[in-house]
Image 1 (tube, rainbow, N blue to C red):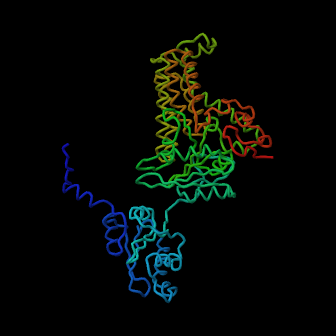
Image 2 (cartoon, one colour; image 1 turned 180 degrees about the horizontal axis):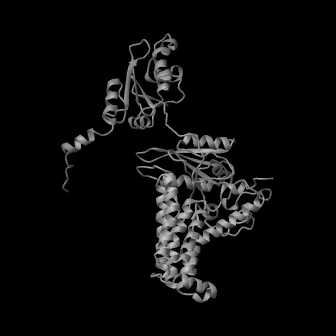
Image 3 (cartoon, helix red, strand yellow; image 1 turned 135 degrees about the vertical axis):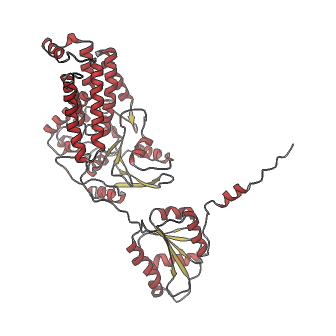
Length: 514
């Protein structure tokens, strides 16, 4: 047999290997600082402060990113302790060994809360990028990481996307610590369990999974952990990244994970046995599992009495059907089934459509696209200008189209009623799904008339029945049928009658009211 020689490393490969991130630290302080400079580079906010440890000849160095640290904490709790408190607390005997010296500094000198020892260079770079401070001691091949993070966060404000007439006014913000504190304030119990993760190879974004121990189904919690552990991407910038990476069916138009900015909504979900996912840098918290009826509910449903709340829920379901099917039903009646329209109404509609050059489908398509563009423009523009564009633009476009004879007046009424109904849906993701499916329903009506609308509705119903969210049927409590859970479905019964948690969550403690 002919033995093949291993190819020699080229000069480029040798240089590449030499430029790789070093593994461990040196005992020489200057060498460690050079390693930091070579890896992080010449960044404007990278600071290295070298000074002597007390009155000794041993040098120490602090390395941090100035834009991320609490300057007062570094100066008062770290530098002063190392420069002055070391001489006061230093024992008479000399400290020998790196473990003894580092332990003495961490436990007897530094008055900062978070101190941990790091032995690998890669881990230290991550801690510095998070806003912590690295402490190097000459003669030791380890580094101490000091918690000095200070992030700029906005104050607690009322959620913009979920405005209520009655209920708490506080909302989540972009700070993970603040969001956890809001949950702790609402759930003063040790059963609230928080598990921390880090997602994103480059962003290193903190994520927390929250659930109620003794209530949440362990299988659901385990499934959430497994899906999060499978995430391997460069960046996780918002909770929408996590939502798309862990949902059951990415090809479904319906959102299978609910999100909210309201702490009271998350607390209610946790007490029902659901799992919350909080991410650093966003004010939107994810809640799983999710069913479609939950997307049509509002937190205010539980703050008002049950009779008006039930009426509002009925109106929301009606608004969802109008938003999805009204234009397609109009197209099918006008184009295929004129005999189903009452005579006087048919004559009136024929008079209003006289002179319109387009069929009803093209007419509806023009108006729906115009409304969607105006809606999107109103969202992207500054708030005062956006409201003006949405209202004035809709009126001007509709009036001009009718005056020009391009659109019939009754089509303007149909499209306006459809747009208003879509605004009544509490969840923005569910509203987008219905707006998208509305166009498919219009195409079905243009091809097959009312039969096409019925077939389209049956196809959507079958899809919803097959859809699941973390093992829970998406259309529960209709499938599987549960008479007890209909107390909080379309009609909300009085709170005194809702004594058990939803059975679909398979909670360990189903009783919430005795």
